[in-house]
Image (cartoon, rainbow over all chains, first blue to last red; front, side, top):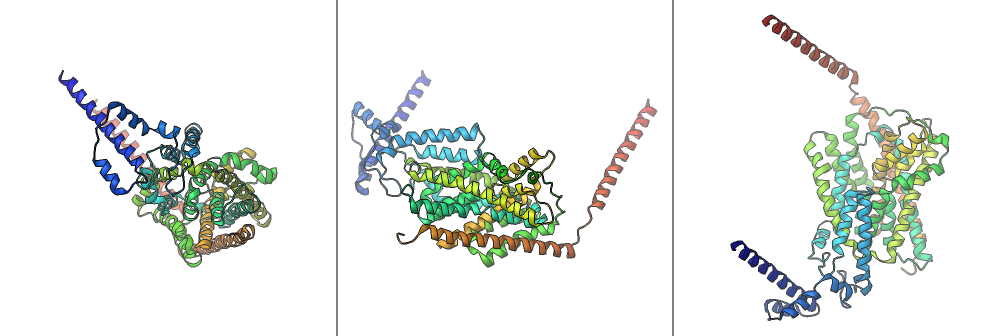
Length: 448
Length: 81
């Protein structure tokens, strides 16, 4: 009996709480145009209502009601009118897209570490009424905390630096040029995006937006997010999703291009084993990078600074605890926040726009062109140098560490079993990271 | 933005961007080669072999002691029995 009363009381309290919350919500909704002062008054005063009125009011606060009856006056956070389509069908379509992303992340293993938080962020962002992406919403807070000010991508870069071994690059420095060639993907697609906006009516990107989109060709998630939030925050969601989806698709996109541009003999080239790299070289390398950046391209210093610091901490060998934190705990925590914050940009009114399609197409082209440029440079270097160079490793010049290098190794060993190209491909691969950070710095310096 | 041709602008960006990327990475190539030479000169690579030999002898001696210990223990057991 005692227990029954307790349960009854508890359920009463919960019901009262829900009713109260509903009352607050509906009054908030009504008071969009009303003065702030009045709003606080209406919140404080509680008018007695019949049960049917309460239920009716409560229904008006539900997501079902918001989806069926779009509010014509609702504004999104950037002040634009939230169109009825985006409020109703748009949200439903976004839920479907998000479930596709969940499927890709869980069943297909597409970069799940980022795609899953991004998709879930998008899931939450499209909840009607709750305004999760507003300045006071959970996603909005996370976004303002670290993405709007470009902070989270830098922390990720620090972790990537702490995970990167420059050994293969130091052993054969010339392969860095392959990482440079692959950045043609960025600038080639920049021209393509500009041409599409200039000569067609389908897309109308500004130069800043073109630059932000083309950086997808750098195949580097944090760099893409960094540049997008600096140059075109309105396109951030689509750019991040495109970048990470294509990075996950590297094993599908790259091999056909690699095979098309090389002959069988070239693919079968066996490369000499690399020399031993002294520990001192590895310690000096990040310092050298920073000196170069300081002298020639200070605009790239946030990205390269974080990257070099992570790498320096790792190679110094005396702060294993710090480098361990950067590689694991820190990068994991930031990945959670970064994913959710990027997901906030998957709101229907920002994602379901024609531009998204353009970003997807240009991004794919950027990836393909980058791969092709790397492979062609590989062919050239093979012709020029005395040492044989397998042109396949040029494909690893698009960053996407270490996925692209693994793909190269796989294609290489398919052509000639036992020919392990992995370590040779890691050189251009890490050079690609530097290359895309440099390209990002150049783009930033143009618009600064 | 009307009077600016996006394509010519982006082509200029491409020339600048690819130029800088190539220059930076070429500088990295030059400097790493230089650095490798300097390091090789002033911090000669300690040959790997002594470490390998040393570790080999260490493992060898430890297994020897283990064998000796086992024999001693066995003999002791035998004596006791």
